Image 1: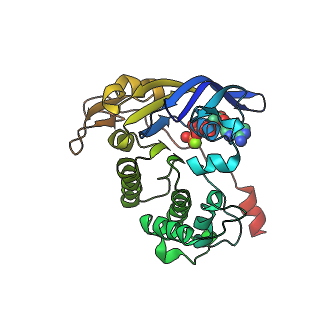
Image 2 (image 1 turned 135 degrees about the vertical axis):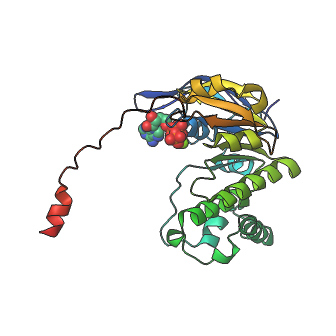
Image 3 (image 1 turned 180 degrees about the vertical axis):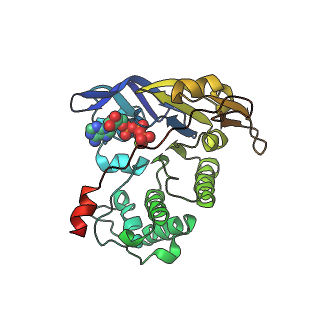
Amino acid sequence: MSRLRAERLELGYDQRSIVHDLDVTIPDRSFTVIVGANGCGKSTLLRGLARMLTPRAGLVLLDGKHIRSLPSKEIARRLGLLPQGPIAPDGITVADLVGRGRYPHQGLLRQWSATDELAVVDAMAATGITDLADAYVDELSGGQRQRAWLAMALAQQTPIMLLDEPTTFLDIAHQVDVLDLCADLHQSRGHTLVLVLHDLNQACRYATHLIAMRDGRIVAEGHPSEIVTADLVERVFGLRCRVITDPESGTPLVIPAARRTATGPSPAPVSPPAPEPRRDAAETAS
Ligand SMILES: Nc1ncnc2c1ncn2[C@@H]1O[C@H](COP(=O)(O)OP(=O)(O)OP(=O)(O)O)[C@@H](O)[C@H]1O
Ligand SMILES: [Mg+2]
């Protein structure tokens, strides 16, 4: 039995339905990666799986129990969600933000402990932000802030982690650091990870289970080597490409088709539209 799964899940906002009749089983101890075009419903699905969004129909099961029947703290000890574009409280320091990851582990009788302190120190070291402990979150660079949030999710020490685009804003070395860190959590601690990633080649390198979504539905899932083909990429993203073998890792490597070939005709030049007078600039000048 899988710890996290959903059956016939329908999710949406107001009148709009986004995720349609979706069945998904997150394999235990997998490094699952969800890919799909902007707006196809990846973040919505993650929110649904983490009980941040109430399904219109269907259900999410955590350890075989209807997730809505479990107390919030109980869920937060088993499953952590790093949302896309989280907003930090004003005037909070990095160490305080990371410390918030420990909230589910505290109770009326158990206040801040040495275990909590160690979890925070470890999470900051793992994400390379120890030197920033006393900095204010709103004064960090985009990449530093992203790593502070990731540290908060790590400090929560949940066996299941849902991370929505954890590599956004990171330079390439820090992207690899974060993905390696996730791979370590998955391999050495047996954590189950579900990441949303936009970089298909990174997804293919790290995922043990890949889920490709389009228009709120799963189009394909399985091991990247089994499912990633030029045809799938075209169906999911509308992008023509070649899929070759990554010489470094042996996994699929997606190469978008070049815009024009050396022998093919050049596209007609497009002249840029004449700039419109900028009202705001004129107003500021006057
Ligand atoms: N809070 C919200 N209220 C209303 N509509 C929303 C809300 N959040 C997302 N949507 C809509 O739901 C659809 C799916 O959004 P979602 O954020 O799940 O996409 P995504 O696949 O994560 O995209 P991206 O790759 O850009 O992050 C979009 O059309 C979006 O406009
Ligand atoms: Mg998203």
